[in-house]
Length: 356
Image (cartoon, rainbow, N blue to C red; front, top):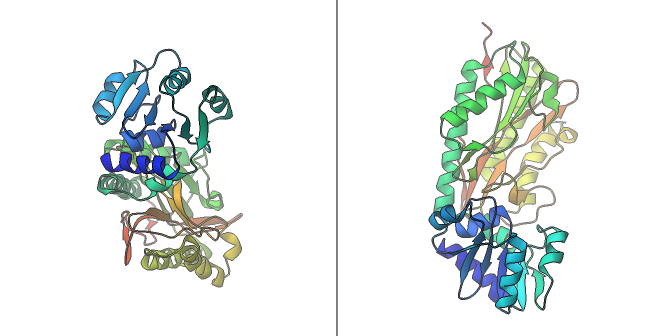
C-alpha cells in the first residue's frame, strides 16, 4: 500500500493541502486496505490515520497495518472535526463529488477550510498494480468457469430467475465473495432490454439468452456477458449475433495504450452501423473495472480519455431489437502498450444448446 499512500501525499503537495480526508468506501479501501463499511482516513505529510468504531478496530489493525488506528468517540463526523481542529489543519482536501452536503456542512464548522480535490484518487485507481491485476484475473476465471457450467444446465422450461440462481450459486462455490452486480438474464424478446434483470419469464425453445454477470474476489470485480441459444434461433438472431461478435472481436484485437475511448468505441460502432443496426446499439462500448463495477476510464463516443498500460476495461457491444431480442458479448481487457490482454476467455462462439 506504500505506493498508494505516496500518491495520496502527492495530492497534498499538488493542491497545497495540510491534510487529505477520505470518507468513501472504495477510496478508503484502496488507500488503506481496510474493507470495513464505516471509517475515514486522514493523510498528512507525517501521519496516516484510520478512524473507525469499536466494531472494526481489530479488523482495521490487521488490514491497514501502515495506518494508526483511532477509535472514534461518538459519531464519526464529530470525531473527525475535533481532530482537524485540535491539529489546526487549515486546508483539508475531501471528495467533494462524493460526500453529501449534510456531511460537508457538519465537517466545515470551524477555522479550517474544506477544499474539493476532484477525482484525483479515482484517477490514480484507474492504473492497476500487480495485486489488483491478480485479483481481477481470479474474478475473471470464476465467471469463465461459471459460464461453462451454466451451458450444462440451461434448458427450455426454466425461468430466468432459476438460471440466475444456478449461476450465482456456482460462482460462490468457485470462490467468489459475492456477485459484483445484479445478474442480468434476458431471454427471447426480453433480450432487447440491455439491463433486463432476471424475471419469471420461462425460457422457450429458440430463445437467445443473454447473461451479464460478474464475481467479486478479494474486493475486485469481473464483468462478462455471453449470449447463447436454447434450441434453434431465428436466422435474423444468428445474423445479429455474428455482427456483434465481429464488432467485439475487432475492438478487442485493436485496443491498445495511446488510444482514446472515442477511438475504441468507434471501431465497434462503425461495424454495427455499417451492418444496418447502428440505432440498435444505444450504450457505450465499455467502462473501467476494479474495486467498482463501473469506474474510469470509459469507452464511448464522448470519452476522450487516453488509455494507458494497466487500465482495465470492458468491451461490450450489443444490438437490441424490440419485439425480437438482443445480443451482447463482453470481455474484461487489461490495456498494454501494444494491445490488450483478455482476462475472460470462455467461448464466444454461438452455442446452440440441443433440446432434450
